[in-house]
Structure formats: C-alpha cells, structure tokens
Image (cartoon, rainbow, N blue to C red):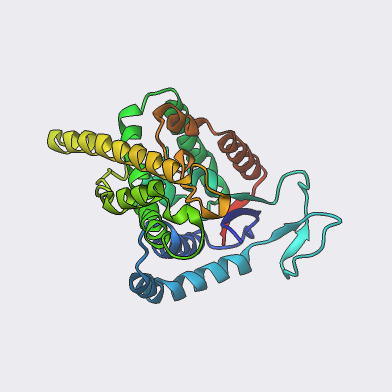
Length: 295
C-alpha cells in the first residue's frame, strides 16, 4: 500500500461547491493525521488526531471514491468498483505516487504537506507549473540559502530517528557469545558510542521560503553547521563500528542515510521522477481527469 493520485472523472452534473468542500475535508483530515512524519511519533497524539479527524476524513474519502468514475484498462482484471468504465486512454498510467513531491526534501515542507489532496482538472496545470518552477530554480542554485536550511532539517531528523537505535545496539553488543564482542577495540568503540552526545535540536526551519529576522537567519546558519558536523561524526563512528563485522552485526546507518553533500542534496530537485510525475499529471488533466488522492 502507498499513497497515490488516481486519474478519475467526476460526473459533470456534480455541484462544484459541494465537490470542493469534500476535497477540502479529505485534504485537511489526511494532512493532519498522516501528512507529515516525525522521528519520535507520539502514539497518544496520533490517537487524538485520528479521533478528531479520522471519521471526517473517512467520510469525505469514501464519498469522493463513490462519486468518481474509474477507468478500467482493457484486458486487466476488474477492481470490482461499480463505477468503472472502459478506459479511453489505456496508455496513460492509471496512478502516480504522490512521493515525487511529498518525499522530496528540496520542496518547502508546507508544499509537501499540501500535495496530499485531490486536484480537479482545472487545478492541475497551475499546481504543476508552481512545482516545476520551484524545482527548476532550486536545481539551478537559486534557492540555495533555503535549501541549506532544509538540508539541516533532514540531517537533524535523520539523526534523531537513528541515534537511539545506534545507542541501543552499542549497549547490547557486549551480551552473548562471539569473540568480536569483547575485543579491546570493540570495548573502546562501545564506550565511545555510549559517551557520544545526543543529536542537536531539530532546527526551526520556515515551512515556506521567505525573509527571516537577522537573528533567526544567524541561528539557522549556526545550527546547520552544528548538525552537519554531528551527522558526519556519527557516520564516521558507525563506519568504524561496522568495519570488519558480518552484515548481521552491522548498524548500517552510513552516509547514504543522511544529506551530507549539499550538491547531491540540491540535485534531488532534478530527480527524473519529478518530470515523470509532472508529465503524467499534465496529460491526465489535459484529457479531463481529476487526480484523486488514494491511500
């Protein structure tokens, strides 16, 4: 299972205001309940959020799916929906993941969150133009100051997510059989890992780009430097721990799990998946399809 946009048609006789209201309810509730993940999930907060919004989201989502007409590709098994019809554009994929936008860290957090919604045909082109313009400018280096803040956020959240596991593995590694667990080198590494500090705080990065107070901008530069240094030292420590160990004993959180290189981070704004997503959405809307959020 994942989160997709499905190309669908809504009957022309539907009242636009009512349809807009259903889409807004689906978007608000999904974005509130599931639209943004944090390293330390609070199950009580999650349960309260679901209690406050889950039923409304389920109702709006159910109604949108009931109203939509789903193209059924010829020759493929039926999905069992009563509102299927013979696909008149079988060469256009029926679905596209939302992840090219929602999981791309070079987009502003608010934009990533807001992409979890249904788009009607006339809403697609302006939205794609906005996404494409941002990605083009970001890849060309015209948003570097803001992207460095987003890079710091990615590294901080990654460190907060992985550091507890690194510490747990180190703490438990002296238990059990295996000579490797009790060598002087392993004991020294274990002690170093247990003394290694907790990650720096997750920075207060603006959810959209814009002017910052001078003090806030200076704080973000300082935090970015501190977080990048921390992530590199943690990666080096994990690399030293993993060296010479069999795969089952390695921690494995290497540099690939962080955004240590800024040029590589910026290059994610030119991810080919983005163009595939933009082209698919544009073609779907040009042929009269809405993009239904499906999860």
